[in-house]
Structure formats: structure tokens, C-alpha cells
Length: 126
Image 1 (cartoon, rainbow, N blue to C red):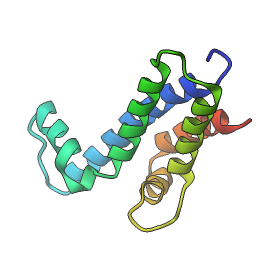
Image 2 (image 1 turned 90 degrees about the vertical axis):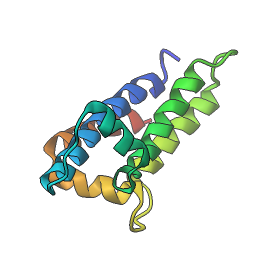
Image 3 (image 1 turned 180 degrees about the vertical axis):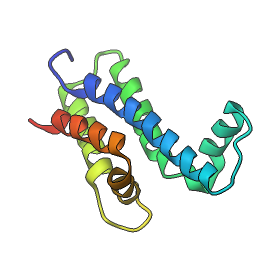
């Protein structure tokens, strides 16, 4: 896996996930909502509908982690499929409410998300 983009992409997606969570948190709090503690924020991430779109990225990162720890080692085909799944998640369909739509909107407003996306796109190149 040393020559495959999956491990680097996984780390980039984890960093992006954190940036997205912080951006969503800021917007949530700017609307007058109070997050009382880290535990309260975790509960919101797991159960509040406003944060549901982020769960798709969370699940993909977990799938990558599990695949990279598989015995026997992950196949190149499986690693390629996970990279393609990430590409589809970030750039996918333009249906309202999808991850890609929410993500694109945030990229327009938050420079750190756009910068992270630019780096991630390099992992998609063949």
C-alpha cells in the first residue's frame, strides 16, 4: 500500500472531516444554539439531523481504516474502489441534500475547506 494513494487520502479526509465539523458547529452556534460540552457536540454529530450529512464521510473513513487493517492485506482493487467512493462522495450527484451539494456550498464559503479539497483532488489523479 506504500505506493497507493489510499493511506494519504484517508488522512486528508480525516482532516477535512474535522474542518467540516468545526464549520458546521460555528454555523449552528451562530444561529443562537449552544453546545454545552464536547460530549453534547458528539451527541449532536451522531443524532441531530443538521449534522447527518457528515456521517457519510465518517462512515467512509471508518471503511478505509477497516480495509487497511484487513488480513490478508487489502487488494489494489479494493483500495481503488475506496478511492473512487471518496471521489464520488465529494464530487457526486447534485441532488438537493446530498453530501456533495452541502460540501460544495461550504467550499464556496470556507477557504480552509477549499484548500483541503484542492489537496484531496491530487490524490484522485492517476
